[in-house]
Image 1 (cartoon, rainbow, N blue to C red):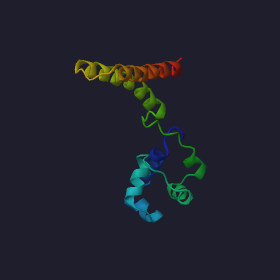
Image 2 (cartoon, rainbow, N blue to C red; image 1 turned 30 degrees about the vertical axis):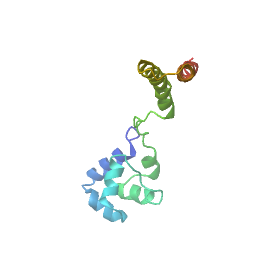
Image 3 (cartoon, rainbow, N blue to C red; image 1 turned 90 degrees about the vertical axis):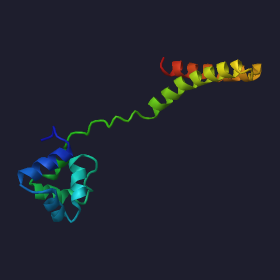
Image 4 (tube, rainbow, N blue to C red; image 1 turned 30 degrees about the horizontal axis):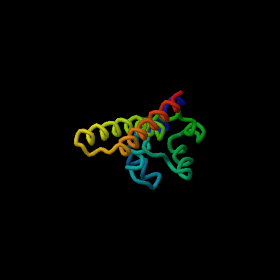
Amino acid sequence: MTNQTMGEIIATLRKEKGMTQKELADLLNITDKAISKWERDVAFPDTATIPKLAKILGISVDDLMNAKAIPSSGHKGAGYFINIVLKAVPLAMGIAVAVTALLGALDVKSGFVMLGIGLACIGAYLLHHK
C-alpha cells in the first residue's frame, strides 16, 4: 500500500467499503469537499482526524501515514525565476539601447549604464551556472 499517495489510499479503501465521500465525511463530522480534496491530494487530514479516519478505513495510522510522497507540483522555485530574470534583463537593456539610439534620445552615459546592467546580469547568470 506504500506505493500510493495518502489520497489514493483513502479513495481506494473508501470505495472498497462501499462508502461515498459524503458518508465518510459524515462519520468524521467534516464536509465531503474535504474528503474530495484529500483524495485528490490537494489537502490532507489534520492530525486529530487521522486516527479516526484510519479506524474507519480499517488500517493502522502507520499504514495511512506511510503513503508515498506526492509528485512535484511543477513549481520551479525562486532559482528558476532568478535565471529567467538574469537572462531577460540583458535582452531588455540591449533593446532599450537600440531603440533609444534609433530615436536619437540616447546619451552616452545612459547607454553605457544600460549595457553595464545587461553585462552584469549575464555575468551573474554565467557565474551561477559555472
